[in-house]
Image (cartoon, rainbow, N blue to C red):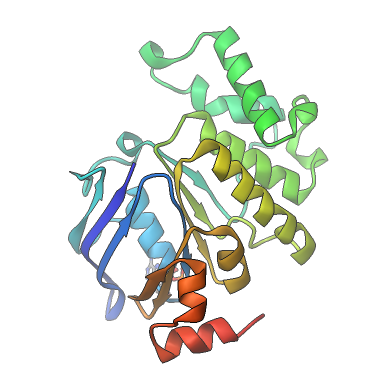
Length: 241
Ligand code: ADP
């Protein structure tokens, strides 16, 4: 599913957070929204998700205007920084949740749910933890389960808001490589927010560099690194954490 953003505008009071944004994301790409804190990354992601309404402009999925449609109609999967797993449910039940709450006529049979969940747990290489509870897992493992859960409903678009932000540096590095591998297997159009240029460089097919509600540059990691489009991009990329 491709994503097209057209002349998108959003302000909170006097703060312009999305300033006439235009962006094309081809189907199947893994794209990073990269920029400093407050540059508007999360707001753009939330507008893509349908969790926030723009003041003007539109978002299209495969050319179809989704602006104003309900979040449930958009078929998006989410992963947040603070993995919102249900603590009282097993890992299996956490991943099965999205399938069990589907409208009755779309709900898969129990046997199908079981095979689908186990397939997803294998995909994130944690099938051996199916009967454990979230508190028995490490932070990195929990975030992989959050990804499996987001994929359970076969989203057309996967949106990740600082997915590894709460983890320590070593685990983050591991998960970066792992997200890349996962994406190469499932090919769902994915957009993730990060303020970490290394993470964007290593994981993304394309990087959207944001600053003060504007898009400074869109390009492959090599393009952005070798040919920064503005002094801001040059300075931001040089500013290694
Ligand atoms: P980023 O994800 O790049 O850190 P955000 O999109 O979260 O940026 O925020 C951009 C700006 O919008 C910030 O100045 C933030 O304080 C402001 N902002 C975000 N959400 C709200 C809100 N619900 N109400 C008021 N201001 C907000």
